[in-house]
Amino acid sequence: MDLPDVVVSLALGGPSVAFTALNSVGTFTTTAHLIVHLSAGSNWGAGPSEARAKTWISEHASRVTINERQLQVQAGTPGVLGAHLSNFEVCEQRRLCNGKNAKFVLMAANVLMLRHGLEQHVAAHSLSFCIHSSSCSDAHLSGDNQLWREKLGELSWDPRSTSSEDFARAVLLRRMRHSVRTSNDSAAVEDGWIARFVELLRSGHLPPTWLARPIAQMPHEGSFYPVRVVRDFLRRGFRGSAFEAALQRQQASGSHPCPCCDLYDTNTSWKSLGSCSFEELLLPTFVWQHHPDLLRAAVPPSVLRVWANLHQPHNVTRVLCHLVAAPSGLGHFFGIKVPHFFLGKMMRDLLRLDPFGASVERDPSWWSRICRES
Image (cartoon, rainbow, N blue to C red; front, side):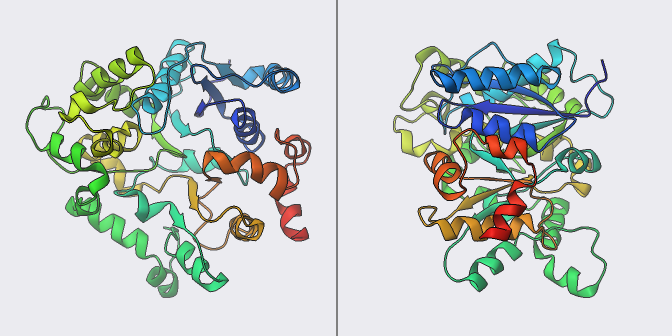
């Protein structure tokens, strides 16, 4: 068996969006192997939904592996990272992660892919990294065309640009490179959402593997790492740690109102919720602390997180079509993440598809056609 250079870890819930996300990622990748975790209590949907999902999976069996383990996964809990690490263990067991240059990509359930080329992009860069989520792949979009285009322009990232005009616009690139070089983690440590995590790392109560700084917070959707880095993270940063214990407590208790209360010595969930999003905190922080050499050529995650009024069709299509056109500096985004409760509506009402994306599978040029017609 040829070993894949890129393995995509999908952490799915169901049934409303699970197959939509799987089909979307499967359609816009060609050589990546997909390892799929379906959270505990979820399924593909009864009747035709489940049948269609299982048929699709069997037709793509050569590059789709279903993780038979089902963890409890809710946003803001250790279970999100747990699902991806469980997929990584499957990757190791199946020897899918044995390729010399293999990379591991994290994808969420509410991701829609926009274009091909993810595998080539991942293979061409060391890993994905940013210091703070709002700085690299979060787009809060509202207002007129000029305003939201300017907001997207702030996420421009094109290290190949050589002209003075391109360099002047590459604010994010320059800021990130400087922050990495100087270990300036102020954007993360000043965020009250992850204050408990910052306090814990600076408390001196953790094993020496975890340093007081630097600290990073990165969106996990579309993030990617060399397999060797994930192995190192599991061995030195996670197994046997207080973070793994928090995951085990959450899994033992099922749906937990405050899954990280013991970890952060608090009894109120809102004080620790952001700091419980291990998938956005532990991996990027570990990389910055122990593999800083890889950050000189890192790029942001390959999925744009869109925060907008998606009840208005125009708000969706104008952003999607702008990204599909791949304007200068935004070509590193291969998909978008939208809030769970909007995803099915987007696919059905706004983008004129059935909930399972069958039209995309038949015609991968579908996005471009939608944009021409809009």
